[in-house]
Image (cartoon, rainbow, N blue to C red; front, side, top):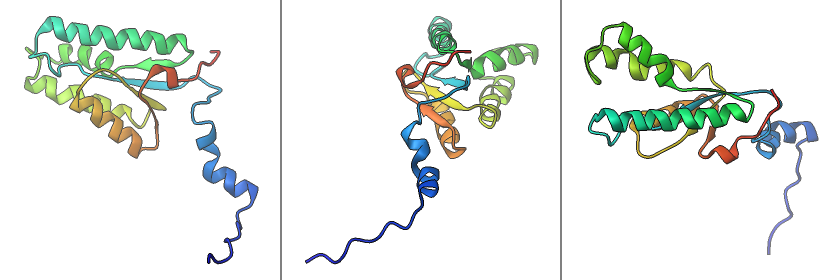
Length: 150
């Protein structure tokens, strides 16, 4: 035979503080800064055409996020011009590696959320892990992102 059920001693305010954000995790009344994280070099063999296709896909998704009223960003949009300016000669060289992933890592504290897209990518997976550890929202499909009127 079961003993008596425990009494809930939490006030409504405390319960809301504990679970309130889970009820409307997808709701936002302001534009979010959303990092689009997907494969850039993964599974390309550093083929420029395949890399360009990955970048195009991230930019298309970023446009969709923008049209939902948010501010999309990719690490590539910031890193690639810096890499070129710093004198990188090829993908994966010392200059490239100095900037490419570190810039996205630095973005994590500034963003509100990450949208993980595409296939396998250690770099994109790292951004999700870092964002989750920082308490950011993680989206796996664009349909999870609420539309806001900007």
